[in-house]
Image: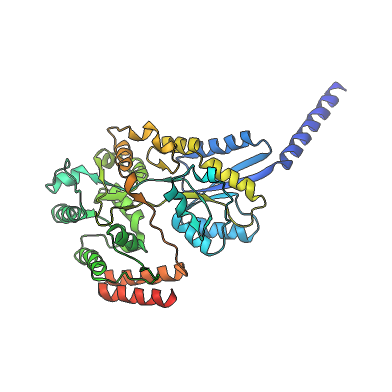
Length: 412
């Protein structure tokens, strides 16, 4: 009898627990390619939000970068979007353009948590569509052994783009390894223009990036490509290929955010041990480093936008941004208070610590240069196709830029 009573009580307790769980609001937040390195930190955030909000259950989902846009659109279409989703600035522009994001209702006090230039990245038509999270100015990780083989001084890495290109040529000629792989795939040449102080649009909003200096810049990379000084898949696989080549010892200089030096550390210990880090060469005409910014957005179709916004603000608050930087060791907060922590001035002997310290000195030059313009997907394809044609020798640099500008202005 006692056993039956005990069993009945246990069953009732389980039913009650299940009922309580069913009554809780279920929230998901998505991130981009953080698993498995940062599982503990993401699960900590989920647990902490649940503790502060007892009627909520939070699930963290990590999605590969190549899949997140389509996965998000599918979730919105099915009526089951995540509460908050981590997007890069360029992804945010594309999804805003497709009407997939909610405008956030932020107070002035909430906005003041973030640096104005980072919040501006997620502001379109006067409304805020996301809150900024982490970023890191790019640096140059370089292989000291390949430098020595090429007769270069590892203690004196290139400080300008001109000396970087000269070093890259010498490395290729002397060792057979590529010197560097410029970030010029897709539409990244637009960022190169802006870093060089060259305009993209005029005061009337017309595209003007086919001037003599723009042509000269593109021609510089066309010549390097034709002469075999940069890898064949530069335009197709970009940074992914560069990281693979560097980790394999076939690339001497990797232009990268310091967080990606961790990949080298995981992929090839010997290459990592030979790696040192130098500042990214700044073109004084532009005096800026394009620094892509990550943020959290709230997708369309959320049943409780206020709660979703609360989660996005929690994930990106001062304390959690600082903790995330401590865990990654290589990224920087977009909040004012967290960015002043002494952690970001601590150096170290390893390349990861060097990358963090070098990148911290470049923060004052950092700016996300992602631009918003109508029909972005269509215009970006025109840009990409013509740049690839120029690299392949199917068009001259001038012809390619002229054709792009003509197509853009016809659309704009």
